[in-house]
Length: 211
Image (tube, rainbow, N blue to C red; front, side):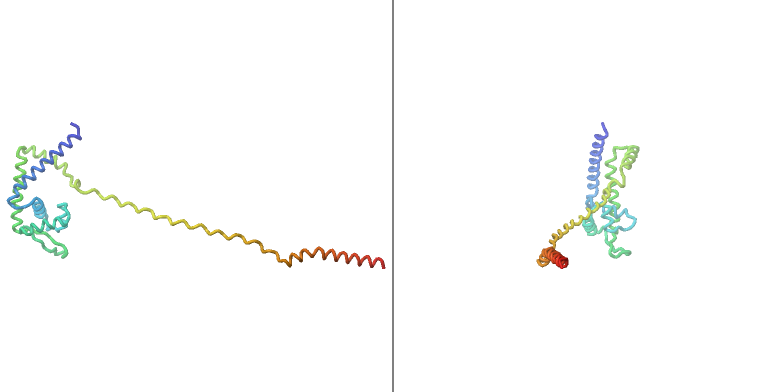
């Protein structure tokens, strides 16, 4: 038998034995009028070195606080538990066993003891010791804790600002100012005037030479 197949068979076997033990305990607890949830809560309260807060009991039972409130309400109505304000923090409530609760605790222990004896009766003392060692090796106190929350993913990078609009096209270069009409006429007349002046100077020179 390979490891994978043996692991499946061991898991199935432990599950069946756990169900048998639970049914035997419920049968023993039936005369006390306790449900399995009430029995567990009462047992944890009794085992605590100091009175528990409601939130602490919820953590140990691994249930949500509103569910533990329902369980404690029923135990309080049965006269097994009483609520008391925490002297160190008046907003907190501590849970205490009543005298009746202490008496029921002893009956619970006997019921659990009897259920265990019935289940493990076929085993010798040596076999029980071996089984205790094997199960203790599997009983990792951290095994039932929820996995650590993965770190929150980093926020997505901020969107890059929208591209600035392209600069407006520069206005087309204005055409050079048109030359004024007077300037054109003056420019056109200048050569003709120069010619006239030269002709007049030439005639004057001819006259002076002839005299």
